[in-house]
Image (cartoon, rainbow, N blue to C red; front, side, top):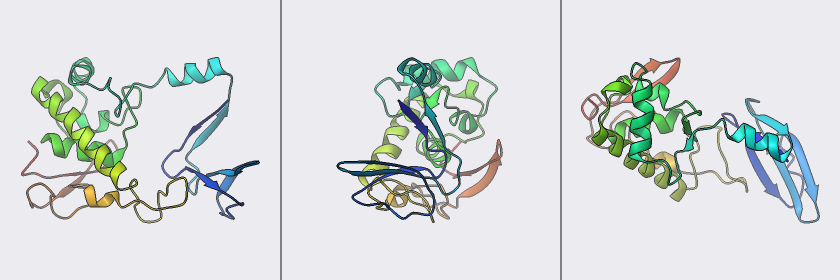
Length: 201
């Protein structure tokens, strides 16, 4: 089995002929065409493992934020285990929030109305519901727009860019998409973090 982690810029590409991409580091061919792994920044990883080892690797991940198991009860339980952690950086921990990324975590906090630096122990049960609802809003908006393409970034399996940036409310924005206020940027756990001082408390 092949198990791959895309990192920040990795993607798989389906094509009828070799892509000719400079950063196509792995190319698999078959009777129906080509499957290429492309990763300009080389942050991704690839593993050739048995079924058992693949499952062991996947078991290290937390609940997928796009799955039915990502519930307010799950979020509340996890946050209470780490009361002193800051919310937004913690949302990037794949051992608990699989599938989250930097822009997603910023957007979740914005839509939940929570300041990204808030300590996890201060997040209420009601706010955990808002976190789950905010997550669904972020993911649904991005998927409807074919994903999130920043400059020189993501394309889908057929090489098409997504316009999910239209769904953003704070990440890399000047004005909040929810209230129109000025968005501020700070750094938390060495990651650029965007938030709206008016919407997020």
